[in-house]
Structures are given as C-alpha cells and as structure tokens.
Image (cartoon, one colour):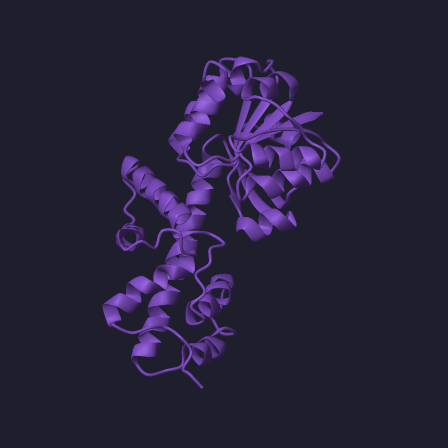
Length: 296
C-alpha cells in the first residue's frame, strides 16, 4: 500500500517520519521544499498533490485551515483530481464538523472515502508516535485506514459518522483549554494571596485537583516558560471553531465563550505564539501580580 502525507509542519513531519520507519511506501508534499527534502532523505518520495492522489491508496494531511484542506483536495490540480475510486483521504487538521462533512460529501460523489481524524498529544506525542486519533467516518473506510494510522498513534478510535472526529476534538479542546485557564487563575490567586505557586502546586497535585494539565502547565507558569509546545494561536483557532459550531447548533458554552475573549485579549497583547501555559498572563494582568517562584 502506498500512502501520501501532505503538511510537514510541527506535527506532520514526525508523523510522516513514523510512516517511513514503519515500512510504508510514503510520498510527501509541502510548500516548504526543505521539509520535503528532509523526508526524502529518510526514504520518502516527493510529489505534487495530484501525483499523490494518482499514486497513493491513502493520503493523509494536517493543514492550518479548512479552506486550505478543501483547496488541496478539490482544486483543479488537487488530490481528488487524480485519485481513483476506492482511495481514502484522511484529514488530521482541526476544523469544524460542517467543514469535514463538506469534504466527505464531495469525495463520496467520486467514490473516494474520507475520514476526519484530528489528533491529540501535541508535538511530543507526534514525535513519540503516541498520538490519540479521534476518527469520524464509515466503518469500512476506518478499518482499511486504521493499521496505517497506528504508525504514529497509541489510540485510534472511531467515534461515529463523518464529523464525529471533529466534534470529539473540539470537546477535547474545551476541556483542555478551560482547564489550563483555571490552573492559571488558581495560581494567580495563590500568588496574590502571598503563597509560593510551586508549593501550592506540589500540595494539590496528588489530590482531586490533580490532572495531566496541572502537571504539564503549572511548572511552566511559575518557571515563566512560555516556549510553545502548543501555541495559544493554534488553540485560539480551535476555540474559535468551538464557538462557531456551538452557535450553529444552539449549544450554550458560557465558559468557553469567556475563554475565547481571554485568548482574544492575549492576541491583542502579542502573546499568540506563546505556549498555552501563557494564558496565565491574562490573569496576572488583572491581579497585577506575576506567577513565579519567590527568589531565594
């Protein structure tokens, strides 16, 4: 089976490398030719979108926006222009369920399968090959694609029909990003009250307040480490998709709507490229304190 991968950014590059290491015949495409050359040096071949469509049984992609995804698939020289009936396109991008269904419907007319398959785990998970993939689509398409997806994932789960993967990813982002914001608010509160944020974290991490988010982000906050694993920019896009989808289906999201405005504020102040632990800077501004360990 020949597989294609489009989008060799922070996430896509290690994902494509895992496909090569797993022994798949891999063809790649990206606007950045240096990244393409890097994958070719490790055993992949390069091609245009149409060439990937013509040569590959399955083509994966992880791209910045739904508009780019749809262009890569449906443009005159896009993947679908040359893919044979029975081929499969898998979109790992973070988009809305409506946008995923548009791709599914457009490809179904051509006899091409489509899976919306956003990922969780960030850059560390992509590098380690331990991503969690939440998939929406038809059962038979999923079963054909699952062994390939397992090259860079520790969990590959079909969550329902097309659009379900995107819904699941948005639900994940609601939980993760609101959790980060609450950790930021709590540590800001603790510092304002005169406590050492590191000591507060150590005291509560094994209780009911403990979580993977707390362990990952609290130390980054009090160590002032905002070098991104996942940027506020990427998560701002996801939360924007949550708001758009929620409004479309009349689902009230009061906490997440407030989180959207918090991210908007950080955007205005130039923090979009900070790690999402940088959400703490919003609460620091409100309280006029800085979350950091006391000087010894």
